[in-house]
Length: 251
Length: 251
Ligand SMILES: Nc1ncnc2c1ncn2[C@@H]1O[C@H](COP(=O)(O)OP(=O)(O)O)[C@@H](O)[C@H]1O
Ligand SMILES: [Mg+2]
Image (cartoon, rainbow over all chains, first blue to last red; front, side, top):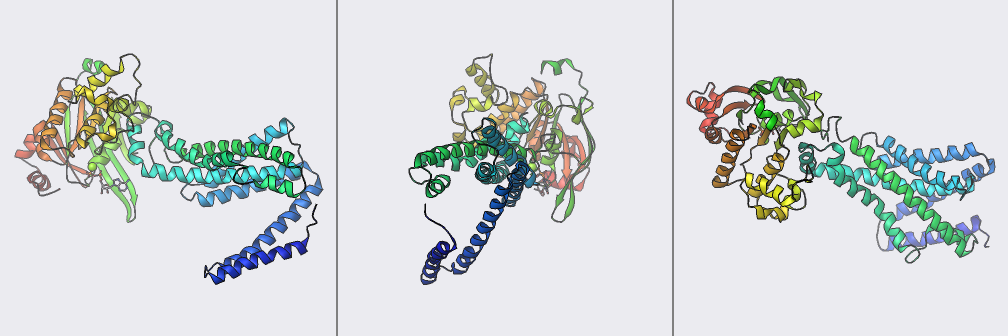
């Protein structure tokens, strides 16, 4: 296995310098952002590296759980920033990402596919939470825009004696599907067009490709399940906020 | 409908000091202001008034599609809040000014609220299509291919499927040519006289109120300024605004 240290990273920086030079030459105007990007990505990732080293070193279950909780909270607020039209979106994001993660990670832990160690739980949680976050934010925003632009359809259903759930169902379906689409498309072309990150990382770190593939399959299924759970739950929670208790559209 | 025939012709719907206030950019606005009225069972009522006078807003309070800010609406002498809202909306059916038909066939639209089980589907559709003066052959047509006039009639038929006691119609002939409008007016009279439906219809066209020969309620700026038999209002308007509205000076 190749030995990686700061020297190797410094060499890799020349690639970013190449990008800056190209940006300048082609007058893309992205030099400043690239420079900031070099700096921030380095600082953030190294910081995360130290944090992970620290947590791994603790070998403590509460520390792992605390780390996962912090990840979910950060993801919830990130999702809420994107779902600007949904009141208290952070809370709905939190509940739905939490559920998606607990269900999937919990199942993997319960059947002992993984054990309660930082090394397994944190990277897997990171991937399920990250994907769930994107899905939840997308689903909530999509619902808001679809229901706002389809008031006549929703109110016609309500006027015909349907409840809020029935009246919004077509838009619920569309939004959840949209939220799952990225994952579904990924599953269809995975390995053909692109080698996924987890697998690439394992191969680089020296694992056998076959083992890396099996892990990737597990990761892929976990993410799919988590995204589905989160999408459905975020949709339900967000839709409920768009109707009054008396089944009146309030947005 | 069979239950209503057995009932005496008392009050079926009443409003007492009904008010709705909405928040606007320039502060709160009373779009319905202290509206009080008793609608008799089997009555035929026309709500007239210039556009923006609150006619649509009033109908939406009767079937609880919007929430009142003050006062009370009673259906069969019980506050409407005491009924399950989906049940209330089937008993007090609203047909919107701009009809919305769900994607699918005309027959599917008719069966939207209550999937047809007993009757063969064709007999069911043709019965309701016949009621609103449409060809039974239209049942299989894609709803999106209908003319606006046909859509309006399908929307009316779809509301009749609910077997309501009260039919709220929001300018049901606004998109129709005079000939088609006459068919709808005749239909409204038939529904009122033969089926015993209480009809509350919005129109901004006073001649239509005259043709239907019911009781008119004149709305201006969210306030009901007067009420009486349409012909009497025509002969002896109690307000200058009513006179100007009848003369066609207000739109
Ligand atoms: N949700 C709402 N928010 C703000 N203003 C409203 C709302 N609904 C209706 N209005 C206003 O209330 C008034 C009455 O509207 P409407 O009932 O549609 O009148 P009409 O049907 O007689 O033309 C209008 O000035 C309209 O702009
Ligand atoms: Mg109107």
